[in-house]
Length: 396
Image 1 (cartoon, rainbow, N blue to C red):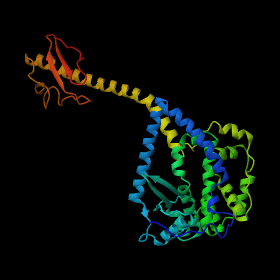
Image 2 (cartoon, rainbow, N blue to C red):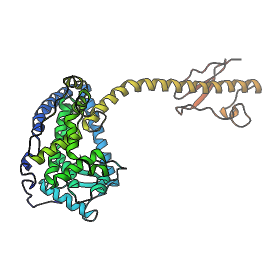
Image 3 (cartoon, one colour):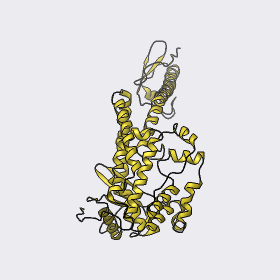
């Protein structure tokens, strides 16, 4: 669906916040640094055979993972439209109009099992905004809180963060700079959400609910919660801030209150040693999701697999050969026993295998090889089509 109407250029409640300045200054500064790091990394990967192979492997798994997630949303989530949740659909179109998004993405509602979250993604040229059902139960389909959440996620798509986290993945992995750039994304998207919320108190309630839960979060004191950002400092808090791809919730509430008051939000001081420790923690929120996280995890898993798989295959092959050897030994022994008991060699394995015979059942090769036997003059030699000869010769 296309939207042709012209939205207002500024929020009536936040006159200093306009479409042109929704992206934070820090995001624009970090963007230049991350682009430079990413270009250098991609060039190195392009001229390194192993690096290029892992980059292709990572790209394949990212594509596969996003494809499966998109398939889950298309098949399992509720698609919001004029017939399905029309009130939420109208709210979504109004938010898209405010952000000058003329081609709205697909909006989906997903049952979350109690989790409060929302996210945006893109796959095969199609954009998705997903809102977990807990948010709708907490706020309703036409509320400032829902508008803030929708605006935040649409901010990711409008700012092309979904595409950037793939193209700039090498730069996002770098310690300090990668997480700082990701945190700037969230700050920019909070500004998008505040721009369309129409009620700053509603935007604050949405943020407080992420920390306090559906019922308690709505009644929390925003000023008291924001003060935690200034009061709770130290080495580990600073390290947590420097390595996380999201600003702390207390800081995000503090920043929203600064927008409401028309003041400049300052950054609380961090412990100097935390910067040194953060240098040893890769960016991209490793293990916590995101494209850069997947790149790191795929490379690590690939390296481990490259070392472990050959060793595992050797052990498995040795085990299979041993099992086949034992089966051939059983057949060789049974053939010799039949010859001793009957004074003549068996015509086939059917003479020694079956109910009431020497072997009740036919021994099998674990790799599904077939057995054949020949008399060598000194005993029987049983061969396997997969493992060859090697059974011991049992003579008279």
